[in-house]
Amino acid sequence: MLAEKAVATFGLPREIDPRDALLEEVYRTAGAVDWLHQQVQALQADQVVWGVTEEVTKDAGEFPGVDTTRAAEVNIWVQLWQRERAHLVKVAKEAISAGIEERKVRLAEQQGAMLAGVIKAILGDLDLTPEQQAKVGTVVPRHLRAVA
Image 1 (cartoon, helix red, strand yellow):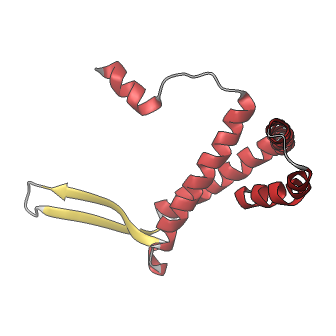
Image 2 (tube, rainbow, N blue to C red; image 1 turned 180 degrees about the vertical axis):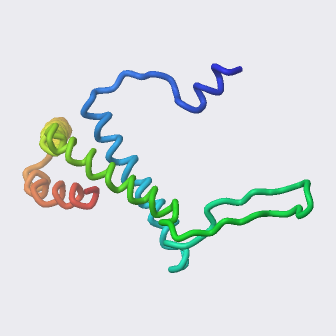
């Protein structure tokens, strides 16, 4: 039971290229930054630096109830947002240093070359008339741009 909870919380190990893992972290962190930004935007101006820092419920004694401590302190949502933003900058720098963008460009070029080869093979198998072949140069790029 404890192992199942750990797997549900932390997941199972998996094989992944370190560059892919770094890129996943960039995307995951960017999503967290966006979500935390929404939480910060929902705060009232005075909640950003002033608010409840502690609440203690007293069930017994002469004065039962809730003791509330308020203080001037940066709201935890703002703190989390700032930390996650700093983490995003860090992983983005690491991704750039690792050449992730160049890798993405190379992959896109390879995919483009493969797609061009497939289209060329398909058109070759269709035994197009000269009139149909003349349209290929305008029809195929138009449809590819629509997909992009």
